[in-house]
Each structure stands twice: as structure tokens, then as C-alpha cells.
Length: 387
Image 1 (tube, rainbow, N blue to C red):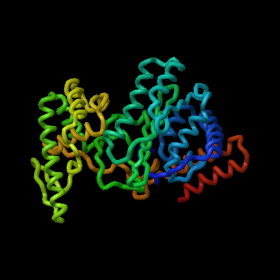
Image 2 (image 1 turned 180 degrees about the vertical axis):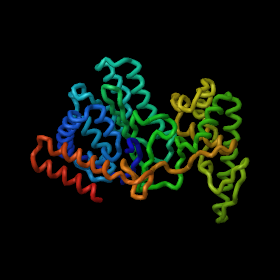
Image 3 (image 1 turned 180 degrees about the horizontal axis):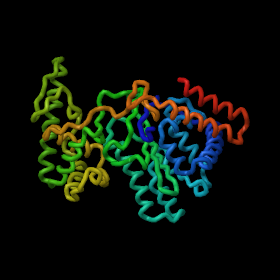
Image 4 (image 1 turned 60 degrees about the vertical axis):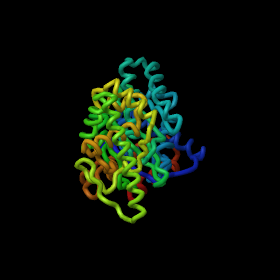
């Protein structure tokens, strides 16, 4: 079963009606009690990290299967459902949508103090929260801007991340899942790829295994000193300006000529649209990282001030000047948690899929809610699985 992944949904606008949210909280509270009692807090967090489990739970509580609002409202409802009982359940949900997402590290630290967790354990949770957000904004440059970040963890330190980005041009949202027990490397394929309704033709994916040379060269570039690094950056700026001018001319002429930079030929390259004109902020960040000399790519990304443009600039220097081409393949894959009908990434595991539905259905039936509420939840669940 895939425990991490990416899924894309149509972009919803508007707000969840208060009456609906309260119903979601009530049902979510009942479901959480039953699931934690039967499977434990660690397993509850693991299941929330599973894209299909998360999606199915949201459908049970109220939402359409492919609604982007499911992510933000479900996590908010579950956070409210366990409020005041987190220590009892052993489950903690931090962050949320918009400004609330930026409070996740503070909320994690507050729980660390209240639970008397070792400082190293709390710091590790905070670090993973921050890094997951940085990876999905600075290394997976797919045009989806992160606006929701929810960090969930158990008393034992098992954690999951559910965050979502929006692409206004595509009118869609994309959700990113992380699960602590399956993350072997924060900067190398920390997600299990999941395709979606919106498949981009080009997306800079610096977490791909095919981008390993790019990650290596980027680290070497900042380790070589500021003066050497800026020579390459300024050369990139010249290429960028030249390519932009040539692209405009060729567009006017209705043709595009192959360009040869070093040993790499380009019909199109993202650098064409880049504005690498003199940027004091970029130069300042590069000066700081060159002085610090991070020993690996993860340390480079973790540095304060390092963001999408810094990582993109280093990647383009590595490609245009040194011929290390990163992956431009959209990391999204469609399979949710149980495989895909085209056997990508593997054939559908029908028994596992059925168990997901059965567990949720049994939990609904065990709740103390009225018959109409149970019937509605089960109806939404079974309707979504037949699509």
C-alpha cells in the first residue's frame, strides 16, 4: 500500500456552512474514538497519511470524492473533533489552512512541552514539518502554491503531513502526503507519485532520482565559494537574457531554432521565462549559503531564506553550464493508495482496497449516532467507491 502521494482535485471556492462543519466534527469525533480504540494512535496517524484512506474518510464525513475543499475542511474538522482530548487519544493535529499553517511549528512545540517530550524529539518533529513544506514548494516546482499544511503525530513520534497547493491557472488543487515510516530521504522522492486529473507537460522536480546529479552539482556549487558561484550565476543571467530575446524574435518569425549551450540542445527551456536580472536578495542568499558551505542538499534547502528561486537558479546553472539535466516530469501519478487500473505503479490490490472500505464502514456502524446519519455516511462511502 502507498502511504505517501499526490492527488489533484478541482478547485473549490466558498466556505463550508457552519451546520455542515459541526456535523463533520461530531461524526469525526465518533470515528476517531473507534479507530484509535481498535487500532491505536500510531495506526490512526498512518491511515491519515494514506491518500485513499484520507479521501474516503472525507467522503464519509461530508464531501464529494474529488472536492479540493475536502482537504482543508476535513483536517479542520478532525482537529476540532479531538480538541481537549489529544493527550487521551495520543493523537495531535497541528497547522491548517492559510495563516494557521504557519503556526504548525509553534503548536508542535507547545505539545512537546505539555507532554514533556525530550527536546530532541520535539525539534525533530518541528524540523520535519518545516522541511516537508519546503520540499513541496521549493523542490517540487509544479505550479501549485502551498496554502494548507497539517502536521499530525502520535505520542510515540509517528508523524504524517497532509498539505495542499492550488494552481489558479489550472483551476485545480493538489494534495501531498508524507508518512514518517516511509520517508527514507527528505529530498529524494519522499512521495509516492500519484497522477491526477491535471497532468502538467513540464514541472521541475528536484526530488526525482533523475535529478540526483543536479542535487550533487548544486551542493558543489555553493561549496566552491561565492566568487566562483557568482561567475556561473552571471553567465546564466547572460544566457537567460539572450534566450529570452531570441525566443521573442523566433516567436515573431513563427519558428524556433535549436540552440546549443555546452553539449545540451534545447527546443524549449524554462530559463527562457526566467528573470535572472540583478537580484540583491538572490545574491544575498547565495552569499550566505556559499559562506556556510552546507555538506549536502538537504542542509542547503534547510537554510533560512533558501526557496524556489534559489534552488531553481542552482539547478539551471547545473544544466545550462554543466549539462546536468534535472527531471521536468510532473511527479503526479494516479493510483491513490491501491495501485492503478493500468498497473501503474502496480496492479490494483483489490483486497487492500476492500479492507479500507470495510474498516470505515464498520467504524460508521459502531458510532452512537442516529440511523439517518449513519445511513448517509455509508451511502457516500459506497457511492464514491463505485465511481
